[in-house]
Length: 236
Image (cartoon, rainbow, N blue to C red; front, side):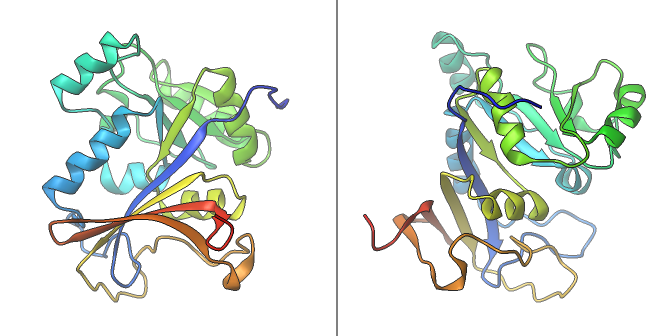
Protein backbone atom coordinates (compact mmCIF):
# COMPACT_ATOMS: atom_id res chain seq x y z
CA UNK A 1 0.00 0.00 0.00
CA UNK A 2 1.44 3.38 -0.97
CA UNK A 3 2.15 5.94 1.71
CA UNK A 4 0.13 9.11 2.16
CA UNK A 5 1.36 12.69 1.87
CA UNK A 6 -1.36 13.75 4.31
CA UNK A 7 -0.56 13.97 8.04
CA UNK A 8 -1.30 10.78 9.89
CA UNK A 9 -4.13 10.72 12.44
CA UNK A 10 -3.38 11.84 15.98
CA UNK A 11 -3.35 8.57 17.91
CA UNK A 12 -4.73 8.24 21.44
CA UNK A 13 -4.27 4.92 23.25
CA UNK A 14 -6.92 4.37 25.92
CA UNK A 15 -6.67 1.49 28.37
CA UNK A 16 -7.78 0.48 31.85
CA UNK A 17 -5.40 -1.71 33.85
CA UNK A 18 -5.16 -3.30 37.26
CA UNK A 19 -2.44 -2.15 39.64
CA UNK A 20 -0.36 -5.13 38.48
CA UNK A 21 -0.77 -4.26 34.80
CA UNK A 22 -3.51 -6.60 33.56
CA UNK A 23 -6.42 -5.58 31.34
CA UNK A 24 -8.64 -8.58 32.13
CA UNK A 25 -8.77 -11.78 34.16
CA UNK A 26 -9.45 -15.38 33.17
CA UNK A 27 -13.04 -15.51 34.45
CA UNK A 28 -15.60 -15.90 31.61
CA UNK A 29 -17.70 -12.95 32.80
CA UNK A 30 -16.37 -9.58 31.70
CA UNK A 31 -14.23 -7.72 34.25
CA UNK A 32 -15.00 -4.01 34.55
CA UNK A 33 -11.86 -2.24 35.71
CA UNK A 34 -13.23 1.30 35.50
CA UNK A 35 -16.16 2.91 37.28
CA UNK A 36 -19.18 4.67 35.77
CA UNK A 37 -17.60 8.12 35.98
CA UNK A 38 -14.51 6.90 34.15
CA UNK A 39 -16.64 5.22 31.49
CA UNK A 40 -18.22 8.64 30.93
CA UNK A 41 -14.75 10.22 30.64
CA UNK A 42 -13.86 7.69 27.97
CA UNK A 43 -17.04 8.54 26.06
CA UNK A 44 -16.09 12.23 26.15
CA UNK A 45 -12.70 11.27 24.68
CA UNK A 46 -14.41 9.15 22.03
CA UNK A 47 -16.69 12.03 21.09
CA UNK A 48 -13.67 14.17 20.22
CA UNK A 49 -12.29 11.50 17.86
CA UNK A 50 -13.08 10.57 14.28
CA UNK A 51 -12.48 6.83 14.56
CA UNK A 52 -12.05 4.07 17.12
CA UNK A 53 -9.93 0.94 16.68
CA UNK A 54 -9.71 -2.41 18.45
CA UNK A 55 -8.05 -5.72 17.72
CA UNK A 56 -9.80 -8.95 16.85
CA UNK A 57 -9.14 -10.49 20.27
CA UNK A 58 -10.85 -7.56 22.00
CA UNK A 59 -13.80 -7.95 19.67
CA UNK A 60 -14.05 -11.66 20.47
CA UNK A 61 -13.45 -11.29 24.21
CA UNK A 62 -15.63 -8.25 24.99
CA UNK A 63 -18.16 -8.19 22.10
CA UNK A 64 -18.31 -4.35 22.30
CA UNK A 65 -20.64 -2.06 20.38
CA UNK A 66 -18.13 0.85 20.38
CA UNK A 67 -20.80 3.52 20.20
CA UNK A 68 -21.43 6.91 21.74
CA UNK A 69 -24.39 6.43 24.08
CA UNK A 70 -25.20 10.05 24.98
CA UNK A 71 -27.87 11.54 22.72
CA UNK A 72 -26.56 14.99 23.59
CA UNK A 73 -23.07 14.11 22.41
CA UNK A 74 -24.39 12.49 19.27
CA UNK A 75 -26.37 15.65 18.53
CA UNK A 76 -23.31 17.82 19.16
CA UNK A 77 -21.29 15.81 16.65
CA UNK A 78 -24.03 16.18 14.06
CA UNK A 79 -24.28 19.91 14.72
CA UNK A 80 -20.52 20.16 14.09
CA UNK A 81 -20.98 18.50 10.70
CA UNK A 82 -19.53 15.15 11.77
CA UNK A 83 -21.07 11.68 11.51
CA UNK A 84 -22.92 10.93 14.76
CA UNK A 85 -20.91 7.79 15.48
CA UNK A 86 -17.21 7.16 15.03
CA UNK A 87 -15.71 5.24 12.16
CA UNK A 88 -15.27 1.79 13.69
CA UNK A 89 -12.12 -0.20 12.89
CA UNK A 90 -10.98 -3.72 13.72
CA UNK A 91 -7.56 -5.23 13.00
CA UNK A 92 -7.11 -8.94 12.36
CA UNK A 93 -4.31 -10.99 10.87
CA UNK A 94 -6.23 -14.23 10.53
CA UNK A 95 -9.63 -12.91 9.42
CA UNK A 96 -11.32 -14.88 12.20
CA UNK A 97 -14.20 -12.48 12.94
CA UNK A 98 -17.79 -13.32 13.85
CA UNK A 99 -20.37 -11.54 11.66
CA UNK A 100 -22.90 -11.85 14.50
CA UNK A 101 -20.79 -9.69 16.86
CA UNK A 102 -22.46 -6.49 18.05
CA UNK A 103 -19.62 -4.43 16.53
CA UNK A 104 -21.16 -4.80 13.05
CA UNK A 105 -24.75 -3.95 13.99
CA UNK A 106 -24.70 -0.79 16.15
CA UNK A 107 -23.75 2.75 15.14
CA UNK A 108 -23.11 1.78 11.53
CA UNK A 109 -25.97 3.55 9.78
CA UNK A 110 -23.67 6.18 8.26
CA UNK A 111 -20.49 4.17 7.69
CA UNK A 112 -19.60 0.52 7.61
CA UNK A 113 -16.73 -0.59 9.86
CA UNK A 114 -13.25 -0.87 8.38
CA UNK A 115 -11.34 -4.14 8.69
CA UNK A 116 -7.56 -3.99 8.29
CA UNK A 117 -6.05 -7.39 7.67
CA UNK A 118 -3.53 -9.42 5.69
CA UNK A 119 -3.88 -10.86 2.20
CA UNK A 120 -4.74 -14.23 3.78
CA UNK A 121 -7.29 -12.69 6.12
CA UNK A 122 -8.89 -10.70 3.33
CA UNK A 123 -9.66 -13.83 1.32
CA UNK A 124 -11.58 -15.26 4.28
CA UNK A 125 -13.34 -12.02 5.23
CA UNK A 126 -14.84 -11.12 1.87
CA UNK A 127 -17.07 -14.19 2.08
CA UNK A 128 -17.56 -14.18 5.85
CA UNK A 129 -18.58 -10.53 6.29
CA UNK A 130 -20.30 -9.73 3.01
CA UNK A 131 -21.48 -6.11 3.17
CA UNK A 132 -20.99 -5.74 6.94
CA UNK A 133 -17.54 -4.16 6.63
CA UNK A 134 -14.99 -2.70 4.25
CA UNK A 135 -12.01 -5.05 4.09
CA UNK A 136 -8.58 -3.49 3.51
CA UNK A 137 -5.54 -5.73 3.05
CA UNK A 138 -2.20 -4.38 4.24
CA UNK A 139 -0.22 -7.13 2.53
CA UNK A 140 1.52 -10.11 4.10
CA UNK A 141 1.47 -8.56 7.57
CA UNK A 142 -0.38 -5.80 9.39
CA UNK A 143 1.76 -2.66 9.31
CA UNK A 144 0.36 0.10 11.49
CA UNK A 145 2.19 2.87 9.66
CA UNK A 146 0.45 1.82 6.45
CA UNK A 147 -2.83 1.57 8.34
CA UNK A 148 -2.51 5.16 9.57
CA UNK A 149 -1.58 6.35 6.08
CA UNK A 150 -4.76 4.77 4.73
CA UNK A 151 -6.85 6.39 7.47
CA UNK A 152 -5.41 9.80 6.63
CA UNK A 153 -6.73 9.32 3.09
CA UNK A 154 -10.15 8.61 4.61
CA UNK A 155 -10.20 11.98 6.44
CA UNK A 156 -9.54 10.51 9.88
CA UNK A 157 -7.78 13.18 11.92
CA UNK A 158 -7.97 11.74 15.45
CA UNK A 159 -7.98 8.02 16.25
CA UNK A 160 -8.70 6.35 19.58
CA UNK A 161 -7.27 2.86 20.08
CA UNK A 162 -8.85 0.74 22.81
CA UNK A 163 -6.87 -2.48 22.71
CA UNK A 164 -6.04 -5.15 23.14
CA UNK A 165 -2.58 -6.27 24.16
CA UNK A 166 -1.11 -6.99 20.73
CA UNK A 167 -2.48 -3.73 19.30
CA UNK A 168 -1.14 -1.55 22.12
CA UNK A 169 2.21 -3.33 21.92
CA UNK A 170 2.57 -2.88 18.16
CA UNK A 171 1.57 0.80 18.19
CA UNK A 172 3.89 1.70 21.08
CA UNK A 173 6.76 -0.35 19.68
CA UNK A 174 6.44 1.49 16.35
CA UNK A 175 6.41 4.88 18.12
CA UNK A 176 3.02 5.79 16.65
CA UNK A 177 1.08 6.81 19.79
CA UNK A 178 0.68 10.53 20.45
CA UNK A 179 -1.12 10.16 23.79
CA UNK A 180 -1.57 7.34 26.29
CA UNK A 181 -4.52 7.47 28.68
CA UNK A 182 -3.96 4.88 31.42
CA UNK A 183 -6.78 4.31 33.92
CA UNK A 184 -5.42 2.38 36.91
CA UNK A 185 -8.01 0.41 38.88
CA UNK A 186 -7.47 -0.62 42.52
CA UNK A 187 -7.38 -4.33 41.70
CA UNK A 188 -4.76 -7.05 41.73
CA UNK A 189 -5.35 -9.86 39.23
CA UNK A 190 -2.18 -11.88 39.49
CA UNK A 191 -3.13 -14.56 36.95
CA UNK A 192 -0.15 -15.50 34.81
CA UNK A 193 -2.23 -16.27 31.71
CA UNK A 194 -4.42 -13.16 31.91
CA UNK A 195 -3.89 -10.48 29.23
CA UNK A 196 -1.57 -7.63 30.12
CA UNK A 197 -1.47 -4.06 28.82
CA UNK A 198 1.53 -4.82 26.59
CA UNK A 199 3.70 -7.79 25.69
CA UNK A 200 7.52 -7.75 25.81
CA UNK A 201 8.85 -5.62 22.93
CA UNK A 202 11.68 -3.34 21.87
CA UNK A 203 10.02 -0.07 22.81
CA UNK A 204 11.65 3.19 21.63
CA UNK A 205 14.37 4.27 24.03
CA UNK A 206 14.30 1.06 26.03
CA UNK A 207 13.82 0.66 29.76
CA UNK A 208 15.71 3.83 30.75
CA UNK A 209 13.54 6.25 28.77
CA UNK A 210 10.86 8.10 30.75
CA UNK A 211 7.74 9.30 28.91
CA UNK A 212 6.34 12.74 29.62
CA UNK A 213 3.50 12.71 32.15
CA UNK A 214 1.12 15.63 31.58
CA UNK A 215 -1.80 14.90 33.90
CA UNK A 216 -3.00 12.72 36.78
CA UNK A 217 -6.70 12.75 37.65
CA UNK A 218 -8.57 10.87 40.37
CA UNK A 219 -12.01 9.64 39.30
CA UNK A 220 -13.52 7.85 42.27
CA UNK A 221 -11.21 4.94 43.01
CA UNK A 222 -9.53 5.11 39.58
CA UNK A 223 -6.40 7.13 38.78
CA UNK A 224 -6.14 8.34 35.17
CA UNK A 225 -2.63 9.09 33.95
CA UNK A 226 -2.04 10.91 30.66
CA UNK A 227 1.34 10.48 28.97
CA UNK A 228 2.89 11.77 25.75
CA UNK A 229 4.78 8.65 24.56
CA UNK A 230 6.74 10.49 21.86
CA UNK A 231 8.18 13.00 24.33
CA UNK A 232 10.82 12.47 27.02
CA UNK A 233 10.05 13.61 30.55
CA UNK A 234 13.18 15.79 30.66
CA UNK A 235 12.75 17.40 27.25
CA UNK A 236 9.63 19.48 27.88
